[in-house]
Length: 99
Image 1 (spheres, helix red, strand yellow):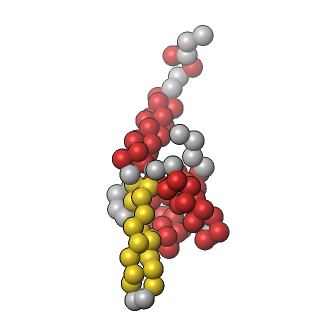
Image 2 (image 1 turned 120 degrees about the horizontal axis):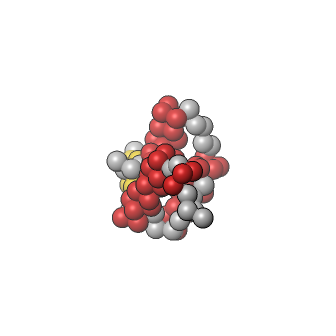
């Protein structure tokens, strides 16, 4: 499945725990030095949700609605496929290329 770089980072950010939008943005900034603004974050989350890669759970906290996101089984499979592709790329050698 084709993902934008931002979408891939979002999947990686929530790979091990559920997070709400601002947590995702903060994690990406602090861990990857990647600033993602709200105008990009929420459309990316909506797209990932529409493609069934993440699920969303809403909760009211202090009178404010918070949406929490986590990977679905398809999201986990997609992230694992990306990781496997990178492993193959790391081990690729032109000598192994078949014409």
